[in-house]
Length: 130
Image 1 (spheres, rainbow, N blue to C red):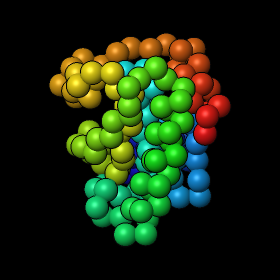
Image 2 (tube, rainbow, N blue to C red):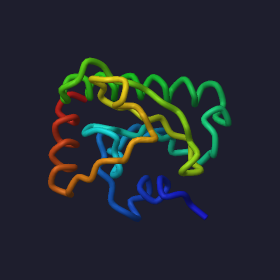
Image 3 (cartoon, rainbow, N blue to C red):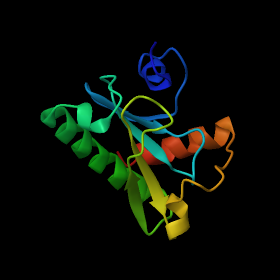
Image 4 (cartoon, helix red, strand yellow):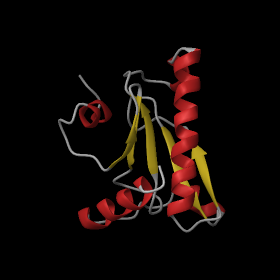
């Protein structure tokens, strides 16, 4: 059964897409820790990040770098943090989160709720810098 990320990649369900390459996609987390929280996902559906071959892994990290730079320019923050957890969705992914405090990347905190209009605004703001 395809993951929810595969369904976004295949445009079966909507996503707030920031950028895309032939092998990866970046879109906003709809249950973010902070505004601008973005997921970077390989198009190849693999469960664990380290199940990717080395070249695919390196390409994904290079793409995440470019996305993080765009987030840093678009969102008010001190830096962009990166986390790989991968327990909620069985599809490898990297979390990129704008940080101003250590608590901004605390996954035990409640997620924030953003409306569709605000999510689209944020996606547009980040896309400008990609």
